[in-house]
Each structure stands twice: as structure tokens, then as C-alpha cells.
Length: 456
Image 1 (cartoon, rainbow, N blue to C red):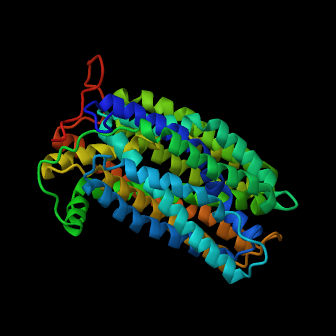
Image 2 (image 1 turned 60 degrees about the vertical axis):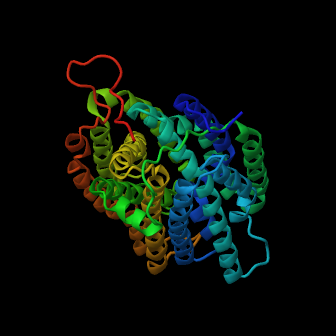
Image 3 (image 1 turned 120 degrees about the vertical axis):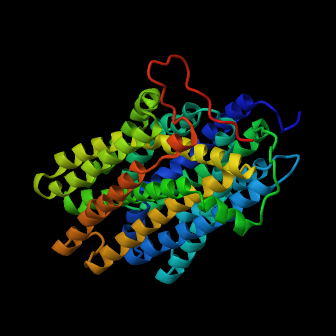
């Protein structure tokens, strides 16, 4: 049976199934990396904070550059195997080595450890890009409404709730073990292998739609210039940068806040689980409100809740853990609202397809991810150097300057970024000017939302 089918619903269902099942093991590793890697690197691998921050920043910047190359290649590919599927397969196979990010060989010096981590992070970013960008591009291509595209973004996180809970508590336990590296070794080797097996077994299920280009694509640099020249796109990636910077700041800072500021390291997993479970559950609530409020208003409300979170966090210096728990709960609700952002990005890709005659979902996904990576890179770099310059010493009681650096990275810096994001989103006018729908039902209307405009 051909892998190219003229059935968007079939492609959507198969892509969603493949994405869901193959994400389970790789998602478990991603949870540990996102929540614990920074403190794991400083307190277990004993790498200086500034070096960790610089490594993460360099890896994310590389990821952004490689994203552009891979997405452009995917968008321009023509093959009987599809233009997305081959990339997904190669990325899945490369996931066999993801364990190397966490399991640095014993006996290495500091510079050797840094070199090992750099290579392992580059490998990880390449593997995840090869599978993630094409999968999300398939979701945008085959989803035809705001709700379908948003569902693609909230379903996967929702089904991984048990994994989030398990990994966070296991991660906290591993960090407190006598030999944390030995404690996590079986997980990461097994999870890396499971990702490869699931990819190979499920790969035949993936289908793609015919490519409906109506004009010849320009060279890569002109294409990028055109994509970045879309004013709506620039606004949206500005908002994405702000939220990515805010979220990553808080995620990296949580273990340090609880260990060195609030003195409750036993609650690290509870805080992470509270956030992620609330984010995934409330995502469905935001999803249900699309016909009433529309996607733009939903994302704006979420960003404003983030501002409240960052305003509350400095109060933990006075009121301790209860206030931090309250901020976490609000953050979970705020994070759920971001589920609409990829659907809004899909609308911009649709608009561009009408203007240019080319389907460029991959490059739009790439640039969006690139901006998120830059936001995360800025966060990691800032936190690492703030800790280094403030006199942070791993596994010791911290001085006032180090405490101030941790709190600043968790509140002040992201507050500024999100304020800019709220302003940018308030000026976003794609739907009014281009006659498109953001999923909001017309006053008094009943029934399903109107479909998005045709892309060709």
C-alpha cells in the first residue's frame, strides 16, 4: 500500500498514534532532562554552573540552526517514501544513544566531561529534531481546524501524565541516592532502546498527503527571507520567545529554589508533578473554550497568569513553601493555555501557502522551535553565569548573592520577557485582516467551527 494517501483524516490519526506511542520512552528522558539535568550536571557530574549554562546554550543554538536545515530539506523533499517519513525514521534510530547525555564515563576530568556532554547534547538535539519537526508538520498539514491542531498539541502531554509523575519522583530519589549516576543508568539505556524499537515497529503505519505546491520554491535563503518577512509570523515568534524564556527559567530554577532557598528538596518532585499534571488537565479546559474565546484570547489569558506567577515567587523569601506551591498551581493553569500556539502557527502557514503557493509547514515549525530554543538558551546561559558570579557552591549553604541570583532567574527576568509577549499578542491581527477564524464561533452560531481557508 502506498505511503502517499489522499485522506487527511487517516494521515492525522496515524501520525497522532505514532507520535503518542513513540513519545512515551523519549518523553520520560525529556522530563528528567528538562527538570533535573542542570542540577544533575552541577551537583552530580560536578561541572561548573557557568559551563553547564554555556553548554546548554550552545546545544540549543545548534539545535535551532540544524532545525532550519532539516525542516528546509524536508519541505523541499520529493520521494515515494514521503517527504517527512524518512527523517522521522532516522531520528528514531539515532535515539539509541540518548543515554550518553546522562551517563558520562567515570574517571574523566572536567574538560573531558564537558567535551563528552557537548557531543552528546549535539547528538540528542539532532535526533529529536529529525523526528519532532516532521511529525508536528504532519499534524499541521493533516489537521484542518483550530481544534484539531490544538488537540494534537494537548493529547500527547495528557497521556504522559503517569510518566511525568513517575520520572519526577524517581528523579528526585536518584539525586538523593549514594550514586545517582548508577541509579539512573538502567532507565536511560532501556528508554533509549525502547524508543528505537517502537519507531521501527510503528513506522509502517505512517502515511502522508500528496504535496500540493503550486509554484516553484525559491532557494533556501530567499525562502527564509519570505517566511520571516511575514509580519504575523514575527509577532508570534516574539510571543513564543517570551513564554519559552519564562517557562525554562522557572523549570531550571525549581530544584535550586527548593534546595537552596526554601530548604525543601524533598518537595522538588511534588512541585514538578503539580505543575505538569495541572498543565495537562487544564489544557483540556482551555481547549473547550476555543469556540467561546478564540485561540488568541486564550493564549493572552495564559500569559497574564504567568505574570502573576512571577510576581508571587519573590514572596517565598518571606512565606516559604506554601507561596511557592501556590505559584506552581497558577503556573500549571497558565501553561495549559499555550496548547493553542501551534494551531495559530498553522494558520500562518496556511496564509503563507495562499500567498506563496508553497506548503512550508516544516520551516514554520522549525523557526518556531528555533525561537523557543533561543529563549531556553538565554535562560540556561543566564542562570549558569548568575550562579557562577554570585559565588554558588554546589551542595553547600548559599550566601545572599547566590540566593538573590536564583530568585532573580525564577521571577524578575521572565516577568520582563512575558510582559513583552503580552504586548505583542495584543497587536496580533491575522484573523481580522485576512478573514480567517481563530476557532471562535460567531455570535449566536451553533455547530462546529468554520474550517480554515484552503491552502492552495
